[in-house]
Amino acid sequence: MATTYAIISLGGKQYRVREGERLLVDRLKTDEGKTFQPDILFLGGDGDGELSPTNAAVTAKVVGHVLGDKVRIGKYRPKSGYKRHTGFRAKLSQIEIESIGTGSKRTTAAPKKEEAPKEEAPEAAPKAAAHPVRGYDDLTVAEVTERSKRWRLEQLEATLEHEKQNANRKGAIAALESAIAAKQEKGS
Image (cartoon, rainbow, N blue to C red):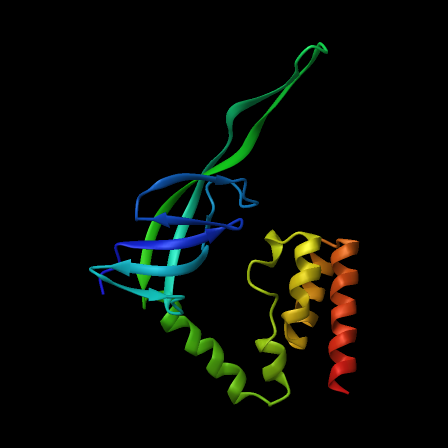
């Protein structure tokens, strides 16, 4: 299948993208000039598509961080003299889609990483498989609290370690610790 477009998810919004296309999205934590791989929801082209592909990669580059157009907001109540004006400019990031690929780098690299822990002692395999939840750094504390109930125990523990090392948000740590305690009580 020749991939002509992809639907990606960034900041809770979905975008239909093609190679070489530039678009404005909500501000990303990625620095200017750096590349990243957003979550892929759909790959399509030539009349057929693939939902939630596992062997595909979309590579995007952050071109720059910009401010959106000024939005003016006015409030007015007749006959009372009440008038209020305010406004804001949205913080945005401009990204460029560098490549949309299927069955390339991720497919060849993933089995090699999985084979190495299997050859080692069986105790090392769960530690290597445990990693923070994908897209965790973009979640707010409220989203972490809500979504952590559905994560596996290994993911919760790895995400807690990641949170303590990187962001160290008290609310997120408390939510993860309570989810771990609930999973351990449920298991025993």
